[in-house]
Figure (spheres, rainbow, N blue to C red):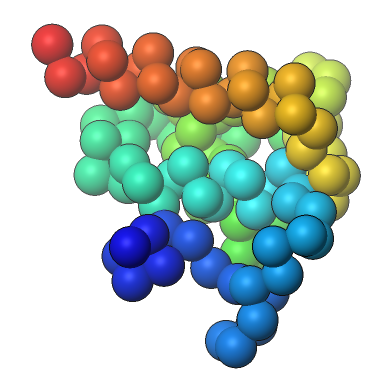
Length: 103
């Protein structure tokens, strides 16, 4: 189960909130937790002026791998909700990266 593996976290220790929204920063951390060992080979890169806090390491790793794209050249919008199109694009870039690294 992904919660047992530490991939999916709730909004608190006892609440998952399945109907709640997900921010761009939270989604980045979710992807990062699934592939931290793989992403370790990439250089860290943080071209975003608005990234700090607990999700910053994940965003930095994913930016270094070329998986994360910002809302502009210098902003990521970590507190913004991720929409379905953005989530799909991010997930496809992550899958493509995983496929390349597994060859």
